[in-house]
Image 1 (spheres, rainbow, N blue to C red):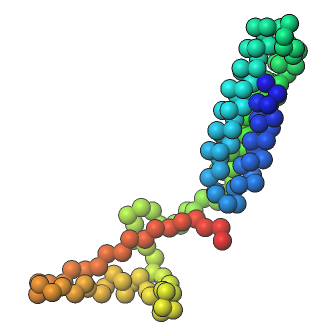
Image 2 (tube, rainbow, N blue to C red):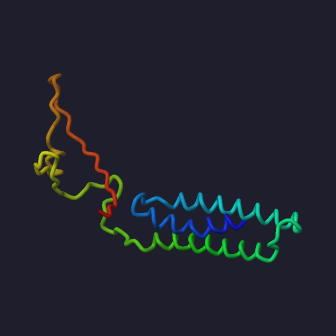
Image 3 (cartoon, rainbow, N blue to C red):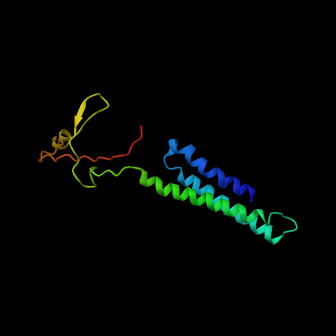
Length: 143
């Protein structure tokens, strides 16, 4: 029971310490919370099934209450964290034409989106060249 409570207390710290590295460390914390819950429930069952061997009939419900409180605060924090990011009102939607932009390629040459879309592909078959398509993947970066 006490090990589960300790894991429950350390789970939020695991999230915040790994957030800069993984950006999706919430699943690690959720897994730790599940392990903590299993250990706490197992310890609580032992406490009430054999009270002469395991002491803690008073501390057990307190540990459970504090653990549930830590888990609830963490879940509420994750829910509220999503609201903290600004809404991208002017961002292109899926399937919408992207605004004109230019990026530098690996050869330090400026490449414009319009060039990529208008340059036809060369075909050896002699038929009319097909137009190029561009797949753009946008990530919300923090670097």
